[in-house]
Length: 478
Image 1 (cartoon, helix red, strand yellow):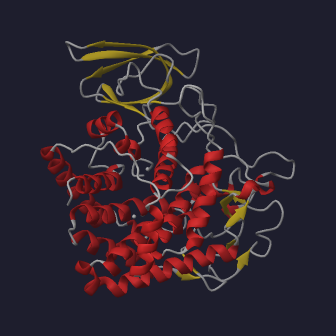
Image 2: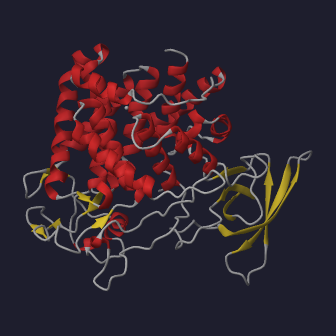
Image 3: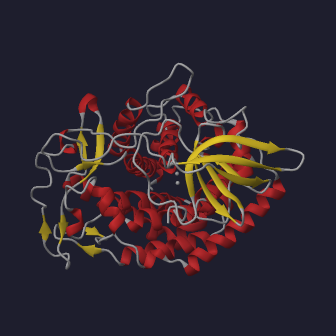
């Protein structure tokens, strides 16, 4: 599922654009090979068209499912239109957005939402289960934030672009109105909390509804001492990106303020190292007294997460903050680039190295993917890696350049288990997990690696590939 599961009014838009003009990012982006770009576009279009037809999560997703199962598709539609100006993607986006919106229900406080029960979301929301969120229907803050980011940005196109305004102008205005209502819903409910040094973080609140969505459970005590759970960094960053989109489109400073105050917290959690990199920051850490149990222990483990997709989301938000002239500087982006490349061997982004933790998913007798994880990982195990997979530490790497094949010797996690040799060949995909794609426009090596390894016909490519096309279109002056 994870693999399926990583920019209204003319005056307001001008105000937001002027705010963003404070920083001129130093991009190093170069033109992509035209033949390859054409091939990528054809394969991406075929894939997203199939998703539109056969994988309509917009018709069924609820609660936290919306964030991870609907958002990538909506981002793909929006980015696809921005890259190609093909209104077919707008038609698809409107179809999906309308399908989602018509399923919203009126909740007990008169606000619209998509409450439901999804096991994985409850685990995330409850942290360590102490808030009992498995027991009732919940409304997801993170889903509202994530899915309405591309909807809001598309609405800007609908209301300002002459090619869309006549047909979709009114629709776009309705999307913006709903987005602002959802924002007010979470403000009223206490979805953000003040923390020290002027920071602010979004939180999960421990309340829900009965099965009929008519009566509150725990609503009146949601903001009592000890109640609530701070979002992990990646989710707080997604909320902040929604705020950036709302600021972009409306120019209202309150949206900028909430995003900026979170980004100050994010930066405070990133420790510079003497080698020009950052220490890999914790996936989650307490932000206030609400993040502790009654016995004063944290509600969630604290440490570096082995799943680098979360750090990819963090990086996307940091780059967005930088591009908006907020908190992060060009020096920060340079340090982040150095961090991204810190696990490479001999400047080769495709080379695993002895001592790295790996996850090998065999396929047809060869290594389908070798993921070089963080050597300093101190976290609990992630969700199951799947049948037939191997987790352990690289002992040695052998490669015969002439023959185009080699071996990776792995010591499984069980120290008593014998070492295993994974055969590799020129078709083996070796991906260094810190190849955060949002850094591709700012570093030639990362761009090269992105173009060499990114798939266009899978879930991870849904949004990032057309976003890259959009950047390439700007580079070409289209």
